[in-house]
Amino acid sequence: MTDAPATDAPATAGASKESLTVRDNRTGVEYDLKITDNTIRAADLGQIKLGDQPGLATYDPGFVNTASCRSSVTYIDGDKGILEYRGYPIEQLAENSSFLEVAYLLIHGALPTKAEYDAWEHEITYHTFVHENVKSFMEGFRYDAHPMGMLMASVGALSTFYPDARNITDPDNRHIQMVRMIAKMPTLGAWSFRHAQGKPFIYPDNDLSYTANFLSMLFKMSEKKYGADERLVKALDTLFILHADHEQNASTNAVRSVGSTQVDPYSAVAAGVGALYGPLHGGANEAVLRMLRRIGSKQNIPAFIEGVKNGNEKLMGFGHRVYKNYDPRAKIIKKSAEDVFAVTGTNPLLEIALELEKIALEDEYFVKRRLYPNVDFYSGLIYEAFQFPPEMFTVLFAIGRTPGWLAQWLELVQDKDQKIARPKQIYTGERGLDFVPSSERWA
Ligand code: SDX
Image 1 (cartoon, helix red, strand yellow):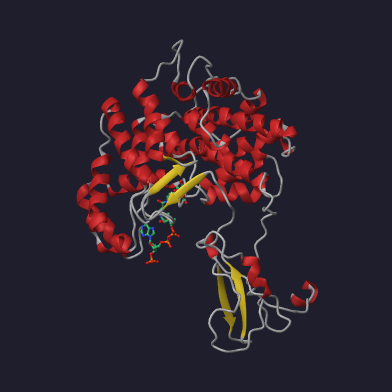
Image 2: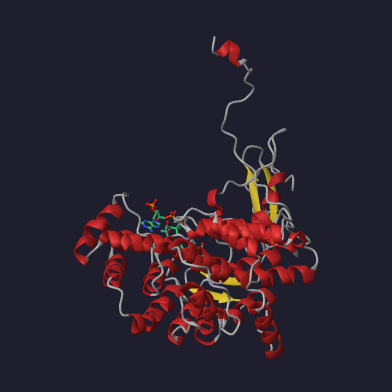
């Protein structure tokens, strides 16, 4: 803080170039705030006071312009439509890698050697089973329970099967819990699906790859071995890669916030599943399908667009807090759709989606607000082609996002800068009221 005289003097003498000089016009005092990584520390505003009032804080609903952490996991440039995991462009990973390799990359920070990958794949494969009590726990849900509610509850329940997961400072313990979660998420997701379908649960088949095993637990019936079409396995594996991480989105923020209390990773990830469930976040892919079905035909699109403009509708699958350009994942998913439809036949709703996108990309309302298709706009069409019901779409998102949530959680628990998440508020309620007992109030 500098007690510079209340003048219009330029930057405070001696202030470093990488700083902000702010003048509190209430007192005429000027302050130099250090700029680091294009941010100022909100805590530095605390020195700016008027009399005995508390120092200044920032007010940022939805953290629209607030960095909560330093992270090296994922980089996004929203204006340029760039997404990189640990520095690798998503386009290259989607084209040339596998979901398990990307999961290794996100968590370990580097691509694996062959030996490291083989060990990783072996560990994941041999941790896909869950305790039999988890099965009976899941059988207790209502017949029509939403799979995301079941997934959120069963991930949280895993914390009771692995109480040693609370020891979050032990690297080996952290490792085995992360392996378990990545390995078991498909089992829990598949069993949520089978429960809703009233079908028997299928156990993991360790002869199959991660994604082929997931498809087997979803769709196997009386056949000895379930053999999914390799093109579908590849398409779903690519979709998992595209969903694997996305810096500080709402569900990752939930995982970090809950994880900041030093709770076990299962409880932190269960919070992430809950956040992802919402229609503004991961639940959007389910909402897109319902929206397309409701539109029903290309002829109804103009009326629907009018509904969006007058605030009665939201164009689900469009818009993004960060991408003010086309979501790079949506581009790749659109391409994956062709591979899937070559096997399953085209989804009739695709025509409506393509026409909706075409109109929206030319319409001033959307152009002005820089609203483009996001990851959820086309993914639902592919999932439906896989014969998934819409309520399963976000479960698929959660399976893909699990390594990202864990990589972010791991970064959090090792970050010396991090503290328990406890934001301030602006109090708008009453003060100093005298309590009147109900016997008098109701007399
Ligand atoms: C995901 O954060 C992530 O990284 C998320 C994600 C990930 O990988 O983790 O990318 C996954 O969640 C993708 C987003 C899926 N959600 C949807 O498709 C739901 C529809 N989209 C919106 O609800 C919205 O675009 C959000 C929630 C995605 C972003 O909201 P913001 O950043 O808070 O933007 P906003 O609501 O302030 O909107 C700015 C303007 C507003 O208009 P005005 O008030 O200025 O007139 O754009 C309008 C909004 O009304 N707007 C939309 C719209 N999205 C924003 N209008 C119509 N339809 C939309 N979809």
